[in-house]
Length: 201
Ligand code: IMP
Ligand code: MG
Image 1 (cartoon, rainbow, N blue to C red):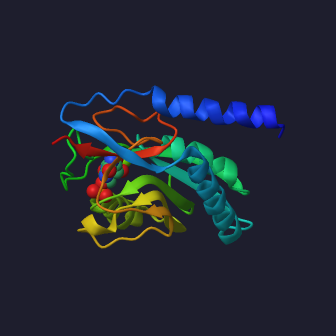
Image 2 (spheres, rainbow, N blue to C red):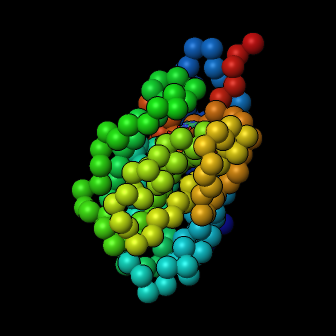
């Protein structure tokens, strides 16, 4: 890449990252955890690993709405395999920063999971309640060939359900994070980086 183009790219990403006004009463942005570049590198690594593990198999990639859609869009383009895409929506946080523990299916897969190699895509595993229910109670009863989980982020400190992802991007501390698909009250999903919110003193 030419020098001019590189410096333009740098300026542009700085502008994009500072453009956003964090307007949540009582909260401020605490800091950026992972930049767009770091995320992109990690997604490519995950894609390579998944391609190797599923060599010769068709993968049904199932995104858990809404948080996973940004990660999923990047991930499927980093996987070298035959892919089919589907989505599910489960109830989660509502508009607060605490998990309810109560899981409901709001939207089921359009296709049948029977006999398929299902790769569930999550944005973040927190208590683990959502995935525990989806994988071990819901999908397990529908005879898929296999079910694996890939998550961009993992917050192991808050786990109450016994569940682990097969592929994890980054393991993080107990922070409330936003960006790259993750929201606070439906805001900030469009940020190209992952940041954390801090309570204002
Ligand atoms: P779990 O059932 O407690 O594991 O909750 C998982 C879901 O809660 C994720 O798919 C997210 O939608 C949401 N969630 C958990 N932690 C965060 C966070 O730090 N920021 C934004 N959403 C989160
Ligand atoms: Mg979610």
